[in-house]
Amino acid sequence: MRKWTIGASIMALAVATASLSACTHSNGKVSTAEPTALASVTTSAPESANPSPAAPSSAPSGSASPSPKATTGTGGTKAQKLDATAVMTIAAQDTSTGDIIVGGYVRGVIEANGTCLFTVTNVGTGSTTTATTTGIDNSDSTSCGSATIPAAKLSTGSYTVFLKYSNSTGSASSTPVDLQVSR
Image 1 (tube, helix red, strand yellow):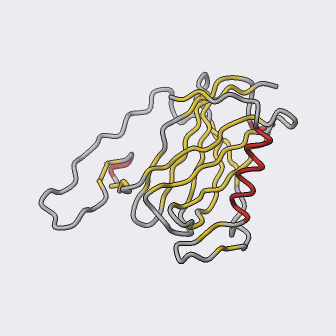
Image 2: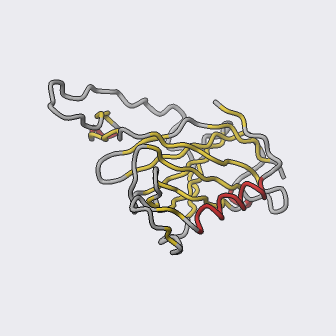
């Protein structure tokens, strides 16, 4: 796990905001359109103190073309793993407002309209807060942009943050990063 240093949050937010204002599409043209969806934030308590881990299964072998890797999620349904990598670019606390800023992108997928789900989990209690954005196609990746989680949604403490990107084909998750929230 990586540890984020909180300090340059304002500058990182400015960079993330600027990157959304002029995205280059795969056709080489620059888009000046606004993002199609605003971030939404939800908070929930842990479902159980000891959730059962997902049991992996292997993808069928001998296929002629590469396919997403299959894993078994909760409830016995098959969730496809994209051949892509979700990357957290920021998980920091804005020192002036106390809000949490999260952002990221997906390498290996260039498309619009996928779902970017940022999950912030309290290490001590297991409670989660999520923020959702819509993916925006970029020249070499899918941008998830950034989202703000209001300070009122989180208490002081240690958190882990990760990004999960989902589309009609499957999903990809980032490596969790550590975040320390203070008031």
